[in-house]
Amino acid sequence: MFNLQRFLRLAKAHWAEYRKTYAWFFGIGIMIHFVILILMFAAEGTRAASNDTQQGFYYMGLFLSAPIFAARYFQAMARPESALIVLMRPASVFEKWLLAFLVTAVLYPIVYTAAFYVCNLPASLLALPIIQSLSAGVEKDWLFFVLTDSKPGQWVSILLSISTCQGFALLGALYFHKMPFIKTIVIAFVLLLATIFIGIIFRATPEMLFDHWARDMSPSPVQQIVFPMVWILMPALLWLASYFALKEREANQ
Amino acid sequence: VDLDARLAVVGQLFRLERKGGKPMKRAPIIFMAAIALFLTGIVSTAGSNAEREFQKQMLDMQGIDTVDLVINKGSANIVIDDSQPASIQNRYSYLDSGASENDVSAEIYQAQKQGRTLVITVKSAENSGYHNAQLSLPSTIRKLIVNEAEISTSLKLDSMELHAVHRVGWSGSVKNLRLIEKQIACEYNCELHATINTGNIDQLYVQANKATVELVQADTIATAELALGENSSLNIRPIGSFKNIVIKEYPAKQALKAPPEATAVGQ
Image 1 (cartoon, each protein chain N blue to C red):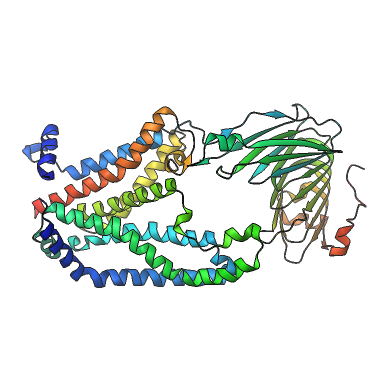
Image 2 (image 1 turned 45 degrees about the vertical axis):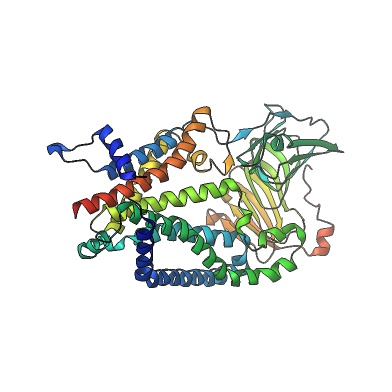
């Protein structure tokens, strides 16, 4: 089921085939980053360099690009001729799935973070004289955003929610044979509507669930069991579903 | 570890089959289970209150006509009402992970009399969320000094003078309402957002260097005098009521040192 040599060969083949695609993906992402940054400077002036804006850029970019990147990992599966090539690769389903997990859920956030800091350098350089000109009381608002600012609870939230979004996107790319991208977005939209609808009917307070790791909102004993279960099992189940979706695609070809 | 074999054992336990004996696809079933779990999590928050409340504290208002409310992180809802005793109750929206209850219990209200002024300080812990102080005050109050507040009354007051920094809203009837931008050392986000919502106001005076003033029902204001800086903006509804409004130049700094008391409140 798992052979390290075979897995490494698969990884090398994947890198050889997709490295240019990944370079383009990041290149386009960096271009969009700078275009938005210029537009924000035009609209808001030096406030576009504030710590809050830098944080906003980081999280917006991560949460928007990570599912797109995950959905594109198996883009070859959308066409029958290229899907066959992917599925016929000399590796087990588990190895293919594991490589997808490592590339999208582990490597992508790391590379994205590194790329963000390079892109964010102009904003931080612009923020520097502003920091120096302000008094001590308001200094913190303009400091260059560093990841260490985030608390451990926030990091758990971010990693688990990113992993959930990526698992969902990857599952959509594998499950739907035709137009997987559009179909996945439609399903996500339906889920959003269902969540809002159920939230209204039951007069729910969803922020208690979403902020479970980041903030102590005094959950009830039932919530203390349900919330961690939801947070941990959601990504686990979605990634497990994507494993079976890949397996079922291979069996059907 | 043969994961396939282990999962096959689990699959056999559930024996998921479609009509005709074909194995049922497991991916959509697991996906539905994940969604069901997520929606269960949402439903489990039904009826929960994300805010925490502190105990209500009564305020001694004897001989007091001015309240200076200092909240370092948050805003206030102030109700001027004679039917209930003067009190303050603080709420906060969340407590950051890593903070303990002791951090929160360190939060205090301090109410200190300084002549005819009651200075109320709501000190919040570093790790707690934004506070929302609920205040009930008697109609004997003539002056309120706040940072951010929504003030309302169902009474017809003689006069009220409001000093605010960031955002202030007024709802209620008053003969003479004065809204003054609080003078503080401010370098960031210094604009005052003042909204006069409802109520019959005989005389309104607003004085601010940089403000966004919104008169939601300007036709219920008999006369309004707005002394605003050149970067301020004004929103009036309905437009026909503009004839009752006089816009003046914001007083120069020298004049501000000795503010005009010609239309002093409470007289």
